Image (tube, rainbow, N blue to C red):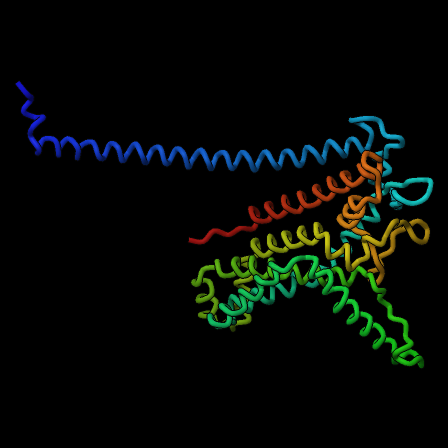
Amino acid sequence: MPDAGATDPSLSCAALLDRAPQRGAVIMRLRDSTLTGLLFASGLFTIGITIAIVGVLAYETLHFFGVVGHRLDEPATFVEFITGLEWTPLLGAQQVFGVWPLLTGTMMVALIAAMVALPIGLIVAVFLSEYAHPKVRAALKPILELLAGIPTVVYGFFALTVITPALQWISKAVQVPFTQTPFEQIEPAFGYFNSTSAGIAVGIMCLPMVSSLSEDALRAVPRSLRDGAFAMGGTRFDVSVRVVVPAALSGIIASFLLAIARAVGETMIVALAAGGLAQMAFGPTDAGEWVFRPHEGSQTMTAYMVQIFLGDAEFGSVEYYSSYAIGFTLFLMTLVLTLVGNWVLKRYREAYE
């Protein structure tokens, strides 16, 4: 005799309705588990890539010093690398690997870039956050972000064709009152390749980073702080400079450090505008001391690495492995800046309810 429940449509519908939530819960758990696994795998992949990069740099750097790997003909010494004031790996019979000329050349360009990007970027951020009309802000923000999307090689050509001639013209104009020589015959103080031109171009490239991140930090300050300052009789300038900027100081400093790290690691601009590819050697000047000369060309750490991989050094030679030592030094510099930025964020961050 057939089961009465098997032929009753009402009971069949009730059973299906009871099973539907169970199937939905299983599908949701499966979807959540899949997404969690993908996110976890992505995180592991990122960590693995970072460890692989650091491992390759560290291993090849030790190979440069003759600690691991096959024996090089004349491996560099660690003391010579960190204390030497001369860098001549490709010229002459005696190779010298003192990192300080490359390090100081890099820091000189980064310093000039910071002098351009940090104050201008902060001023732009304060204007967009505290003074600009919403329509003006909506128009200027995309323009600033467009600067970040321009290829760095374009900035290099801009430095060579616009910034360098402008610096040469200004240096000649400054000399006019002190000489009887016609303007056309005055020798400009800035050479065709110079660190100032490269630093200004790098500063323009870093400007969107500083202004965007600083503006985000300024706009995160609660409106109540502004209203309280206005109630105490403060002007808009007083509120912006004495209340809003100090309250957003942690985010502003973090944007500064990120911009400096970006300037330190820049390659194509300094390779083109600072004459890094033309500098086969860079050594000490008077009395073996490095001199701050921003009007002359210089070789940075990144430009030297480009020069090596253009074919100036034989694969497997000590010159070839020196690029890895420079890369590891550059990695340590950016790591220190990142750690300092994180410390600043934790130390000076203010939480608002």
